[in-house]
Amino acid sequence: MKALAVYCGSATPADPIYIETARLVGRSLAEAGITVVYGGGRLGLMGAVADATLEAGGAVIGVIPEALVGSEVAHRGCTELHVVPGMHERKRQFTDLSDGFLTIPGGVGTMDELWEAISWAQLGYHAKPVGVLNVAGFYDKLIEFNAHMIEVGFIREQHAGIMIADTNLPSLLDRMRDYVPHKPIFAMKAEDL
Image (cartoon, rainbow, N blue to C red):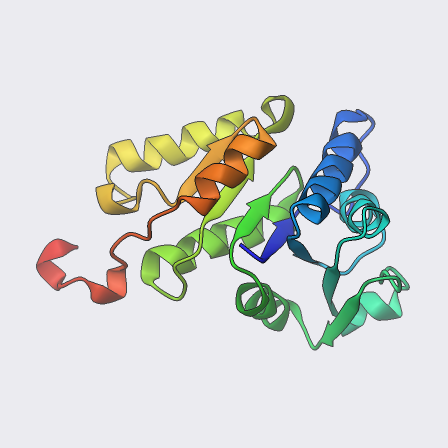
């Protein structure tokens, strides 16, 4: 993995564990020589990931919609800053520029990005690992809900391993490196579905 899209919030929650985690992720990826591809913002966890990566000597590629640049939330210190027309183009660039997706805590936008990465993997638009760093139990209920969708049958057995969740960053990165792509829906026949 040479580049990872990091999905996270632009907010700064009161509990310092979230900002500390964002900084840890940025430092760790820089130390591993992994380029960070992210939403291009300077606020909240997004800004913390970018700043920590840059401070550790790593490369950061920001991808930000024009409307957010106009709101002056763009991180102008990125190694590269791509300004795109909207959110669809932003997520497409995340996929094109990265070798996988790492999700840390965030809100609605983070969930949108995570589920799209999972959905696109399931369909066959990409065959890249999708990791979730479950910090302080933040994603416990999401992981439980994902398991429920598998149990009920809305996620096929062959797609059950797309979301890789872990509480430990080094372990998660190892599991993402070892990810073996599944058979995507696009390669299946109707009777397999």
